[in-house]
Image (tube, rainbow, N blue to C red):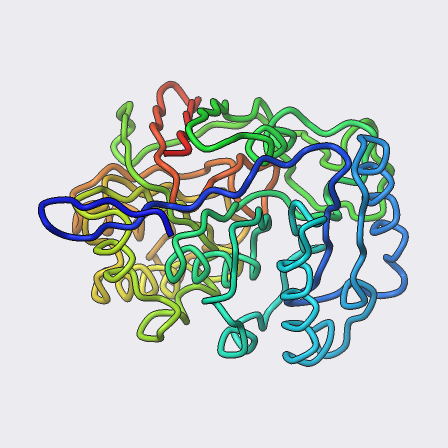
Length: 351
């Protein structure tokens, strides 16, 4: 571990994986849900796209199976994942998609053996990414899923994940918010030209409708799943801050998959009470199809209340998560984010 001595204290650096280069292997391991047989063709199509771009693809056994919401037993999932993590030929691991129960694999993972390697995904995959960054300081990527890369062309926002994976320590990557987003999933629709059917204008919004500029270290995830890390060894935000980013601010990048407005707000309060929002410079929330109101309590009111409690900028309807496309967010990396007039610019620095 690379470290510095700051004011007499040992501070460890964020560890960035080596840049992904052509000829390396993309590992596909399903640490949560695998892919049912009727959708195996989308796995093959996504693999073909990477091969066309000059990469090898290793589709793990877990990617091809799915029963009771998981690809295999926790032990088998962890074994395959660790084998790919230890394989020098594998330059990045991208799960097929998320799921429900990555959390049952966490006690089996040998975090101390992990070496920096790019791991990419969202939804339940964030329940793996966040603990890896918190416990080891290895940067991980909240971004696209493997099956969403099965088209000949990748939309400009999604495609930026390759700029991130190809970057070296010290590099900067600038991303721009999307022009349009997809309002409805169409898994069986042919890519024309993209997997996503971008049919509605994108507008990033802020509580208070004011332009905002924030900077800090990125931490991200799906609230539905990462909230269950609170109070466990896998969600120790304070130790991560002390060890890896002392005196630095955090930009939280979060999404709501299924929660209604009251459950969403209760979860944000849990983050707050647990100290996860300490030293936060701002919070960015992704677009969501969830957030249903209960009586007259709305999703927007939940955002307004947390913004008032924390007294930090709050952004919503951002390019994150289950309403694509999504920008690529590097857990542990330093970012500068500007939101104004419905558009966003983010520069990520691998420092």
